[in-house]
Image 1: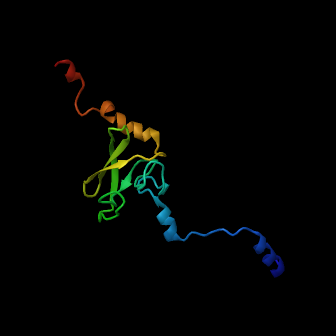
Image 2: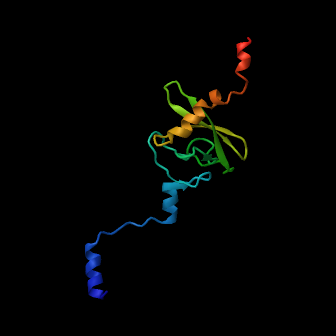
Length: 135
């Protein structure tokens, strides 16, 4: 392509903004469990810290959004807790240090793993239901 045509094309094509690697990391993170690239913004939470696909998290915060934890290990979703207002909260346990954290669910969280966590105590009770009949 001649220089004249290239210059002419450049003047009329829209310019795209390139995002450097550090900016991209600030906008998203890669899930350590399933590998999904997860956007940091989500409906329903201002400090996204878990994958909407598999619900796993990473131990980065001591308090929501502070990024002060030194551990950095994966956090397994254990259960669902429900607040007084009906909001669902994920309970995570760190696979490194064992700390428990409660994290707000986000609007784009996958409903299937959320439901699986919510019904787990009924599907896999910690005691045999048959013994209740004898009481």
